[in-house]
Length: 298
Length: 298
Image (cartoon, rainbow over all chains, first blue to last red; front, side, top):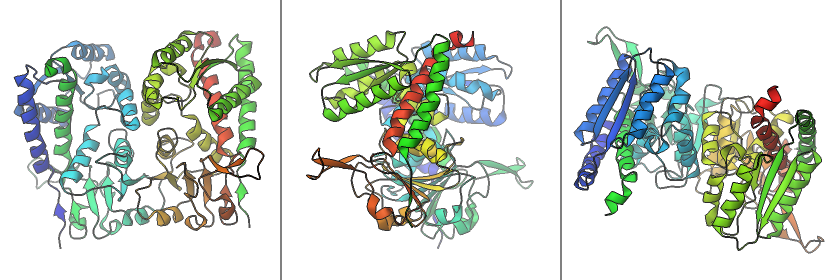
């Protein structure tokens, strides 16, 4: 028997369809959601992520405006671009594409965002609100994974979920959201990392395994029990001369080996990635609604 | 064989001794750490907690100033008292004793604190900074537990820690701090709750079990493996006519039954409680230092 493949592209399309309808309704009230995109430098992967996000925005009627600064931009220039988006009334959400060429600037830049426009959910006050269960923007990849599980008919409540990796962007917020008391949470959650002992046993006892380490072969086939659900957040380039681009993308899990063994698994690409973008659009629509309450209640 | 009893009173005394020395040094630079204490109403337990905190402050040379409002105080009156502490230059830390008589006010009141004076670490921006690994005040009970484990020679790195309970004040921040990469963390952490399946198996596989559910008998003797370490955060009153006050305090774990079985355990009272107060003092001294950098660097 082969695993069910969790089709992130299809689920993301469904969500984008719902959001397109929401945007139509907002526009009927004179509100066009606006996303400010800040790209610093010309890293090909960053460029391609930004393009994908702008394209997805346009498709559902979100206005996106890009500020592109050279890789040599000073922190002052970057903060000034953020400030312009903070003050622009037609921009409701701001996306700073990471990593910045100088990653030591990231903390100051992210903290400079108006938290009401922080659609990535990276500002400390929004992270805190998420942890405390207050209304805020949930970070896009974790929220995308929760939506994917829910819309695939895999309720996590009461199940044991192993989150491999504890990054600020994926593993940490995901583990928190999974264990909180709400409709998409209520799981029993274990967070592990490279220093964890007994990792194989832990993994084999888990109902759902989410791999977000950024390292290929983190989850091998022997680590998942038959019937487990595997969500693979990794996107790793490996050289492959048979591919037109000279490389192909693989995840953090051994997809081909796991496929015959587990109950369900996400592919890479086409799994978590499209969900991340869909939730960015979701947060942008939410931001536009939050910032236009009086107009919308008229 | 009987378990080693982790003596919170003794460890807290050691920490208070270190802090008294720090306060002496601050005073030599003209800085007296000041703690503003806000008590609303006359709940006996709250009154006794506040008194204990003020007494512990005085003993190490921290100035404490109490504002006591009647249980009938409006949210406006409470916010005005917070604001006075926010603006007082001789007050570096603010403690709002919880619960407030009207607990629906707590969110607004805690968010009104100047985050730089939020020595309980409950403000969303401080919770977010903690999660992101930025400098901030760690909440007192979780930090007290980490210090207690460290000072008892029980390093948690690589061990499997089960946190039972996911409150905003104890379980949630503790589980996050335990799994983060720092000198007191780096554990593999599972958070469980009343809806968790297979709780007995989970508990029996854990090296350290931290019970913070607020319910007596959450952890029974059969749930801990021989050699486990048990930290009991619970403080529950049970009627006991043989005691002078008519009640005695018990934790969330079955202490007497666990004692012959596990490697180490905290008593109730005298375990986690004194550590919480010690870390409140620690945060207040830290706040005084942060707010007087220019004076101290002279």
